[in-house]
Image (cartoon, rainbow, N blue to C red; front, side, top):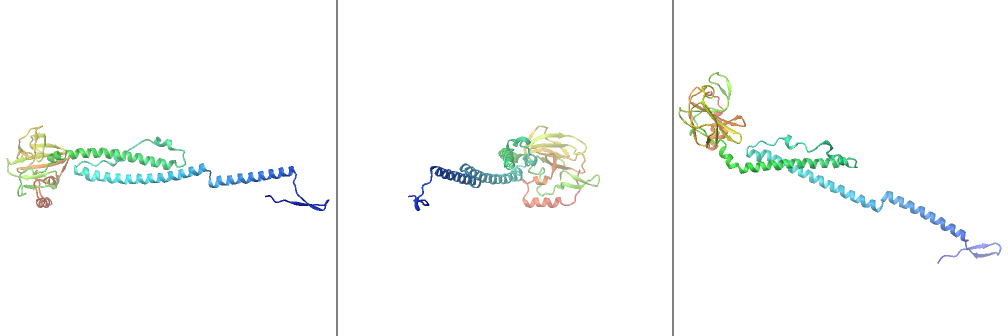
Length: 323
């Protein structure tokens, strides 16, 4: 209940109940409304600027959630990138090495994945650079994973052909050499018997009587049968596939023809003394991707570890070639 107000009336010399006029009451009500409206507007402005509207608060929460999800996504991308690096390393240095396949060049793994305008649609936003960097990283990973998938397909095919490959790789000595005494000169820089200077010797020389049987060291196809009086003299080249070839030089006679399929252990020629040769012997080469490599490393079907070590020690000694 409202409290009554009284004022002193000097005419009646008495206190009388105060009753404001209608105009005064309307003026007071208007003043109250104006003050209340001002306070309301000021409060709303403060809330909107400092706290935000319900819609803005909802948007702020959504932005915060998206930023968190973006960080999670980038962490996952980094883990995938690390896992892919390890996968590529194993592929190049283990899987492809087992099957003697060349590693995939970095220029292929890190190849292009799009033009400069690929990310133009992402320009013009507050966080455009961050979003573009992430999109670029994802594209790089996608490209590298596609290359890795193709590489694994190749490795799978090589694994399926592994048994066939092992049959074709040179794996025995071309001359029966039970006591390892027939190797007269090894692979590497040796003294030339004609010029008496150090020259690179691209194979191994096996000394034995003329007519000694010479055996093919792996399955393949005869690529060349050459008859000559200089250099290698009479020689045979067998293509084993998988990048491998073998050469059998200074022969008395070839027992095979060009295009003929041959098997490991098959007698393909007789030892001779033709061409640039100081005595009856076989000059034997193993060639991988058109480059001569040490044949000693391909005697694993014939040698025990002890015999292999013995041959390596003999190969370290200075010697003169027979051709």
